[in-house]
Length: 108
Image (cartoon, rainbow, N blue to C red; front, side, top):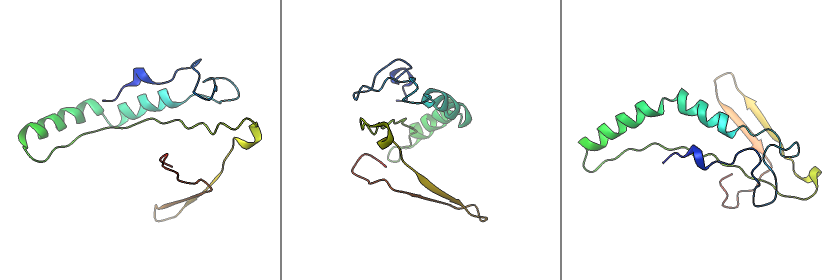
């Protein structure tokens, strides 16, 4: 289930001690993005369509989900808590993103 009420809010602290909304942690955009996605993709309509499809199909089922995620880098030195990416936008509409992150099971 999609649960906005379980999100961190301004003033909450992460397990690493970063307080959401403080100048060090930056602006907390996740609730705003959540609301925007929910409205722009018309989740209530899609849920109804999915429920109707699922009621008519015994073996094939559909669902809908999205999951907000916040990863704190959690270095104690501010200059280490940064990253970068290079984004190429091509005329055919494709996008190439290059970054220096390492996938270690966290869903990069």
